[in-house]
Image 1: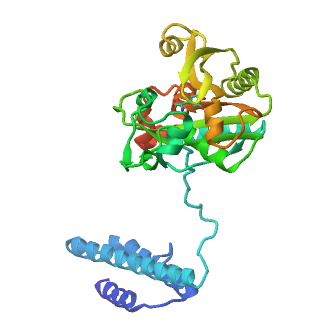
Image 2: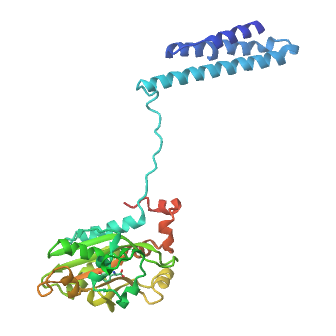
Image 3: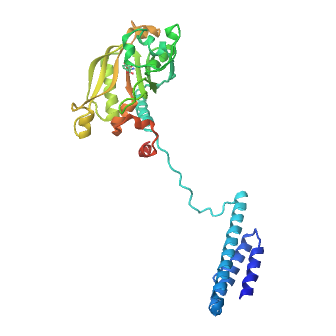
Length: 343
Ligand code: DAH
């Protein structure tokens, strides 16, 4: 028996082949159910007791050597086939590819765009690094205007000429100005984008967030058109069209209003987010101030229009009941994964 073991061991060690049939023959010969190693194991019972320990160890060793050899020959063969474009077992299950999730901010932005596209609004964009003229002055917010304080600004570069001061835009209303510079009425555009404000970061506010700006300019545009458009939007977005317009102030619109929607008080959460009133503020709006039209070389005697602006985070927080704005920017996969099923 010992002799046979040594003989097989040498034979196995020296065996080499890159041929699938030969490798299979090797397997059958040594490791098959009627193979040589199996028959040695069958004979093991005849080994005298005092040799059993030694022979047993050698037998196991032999079996391991044969298995290792077979595995390495099979691997080598598979690699060689893969190199030649033959990929082994093609029925093998594929590696699962995880489907990514769209960010909730993108989902809501796309939804807003889609709702306004349907009524003829086109998307426009502008730079995040903006000059004073487009962010403030052209919007009827000259230097030293107290309303500039409404938006804490990150200035990048101050120059002697205030119009040339560079800053991170504080709102997407700057895109209105850029759009009017290059287009004549009729104008129907929405401008989604990122904006920046020098604010303390908390559950409800951040120094970076997103807005969508809307602008409509044509002959005979009235406040009633604005209200109708907003009712259409809130119906499509939230399934609710009961809104109210509260008089407010923005330098670029006159009159100006803040838009509240009636959210209801059906749940504890509704109670909390509406502070027990059922009403919730969702955006600012108004009739474009004639000065803003003049600044963009549009004749205010001939044309009028309305504008509105809303925060995307705020709307996403409402829709998905997200309690803290910081969650949008933390890239926590467990948070983001929840939006997987939403297109
Ligand atoms: N730009 C304003 C803000 O960031 C929002 C806004 C209010 C935009 C009224 C408008 C508007 O176009 O008419 O707070």
